[in-house]
Image (cartoon, rainbow, N blue to C red):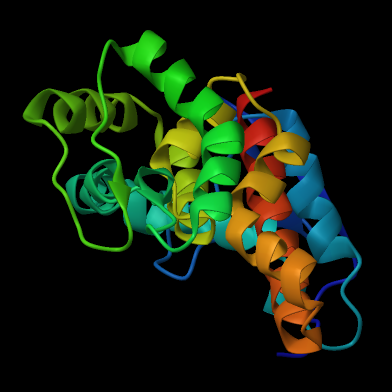
Length: 232
């Protein structure tokens, strides 16, 4: 799409902020007002629009896309979105450890991942079932229920960020730790790529894997920043 405006600005309105392009309010793809909860997020989104060249490139506008997701999807399909995120309570990456032939990896996972699980045990008064290998073992009803409740209480903009973050990380526990300020992105991202980084240490880097991880990291950091800006 060609750029059709000259100026983008954040404008305060009752109960939040909106984005104006040459004085006209931006709407979401579903024609909802792009109504934002904080001035910091509104300013960041206005900047995404302001720096577009002759062609508008949605790929360079992650905050706009996440805000649209909050307003068009989460607000109107909240139960479904909560369910998608909460499903990781029974299949979190942190539950799965190296099998009996990978003791060194399993020990490394325990050293790096167990503090995250310990945090969640204390925070939500739950327990976890860990497994060696990739065979699924169900978590307790209490664990699933309490982690699901921790998702359900979040606001729509937090849920929009969490949907992206959990998909990239493969771990609900890790993203809840981020949401609650127990861990930051610098600490979490290496933990979410622990096995891949471990394999690189053993066998050397794979250029394609490194490139793919860099792309995912950029998406992860953008979603984490969106989360922070929407709550400031």
